[in-house]
Image (cartoon, rainbow, N blue to C red; front, side):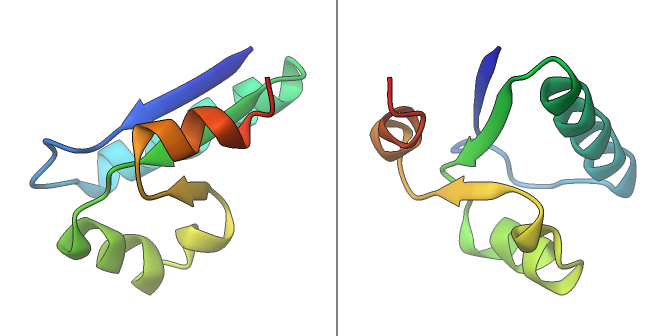
Length: 72
């Protein structure tokens, strides 16, 4: 139900990958879960900002911050 994706080693993100993330977020919400992202490099974060997906996803700086954000 709770998914945290760590993008620490991601250097490139295609539009197809962004679409998959949107679909995964919808599925998580439909199942009563939550999806959060963490560890985005500045250039990847820029993609999320330009596409306004930073408003769709909860993005945390570190994996520890992401886990803590679930409030478990």
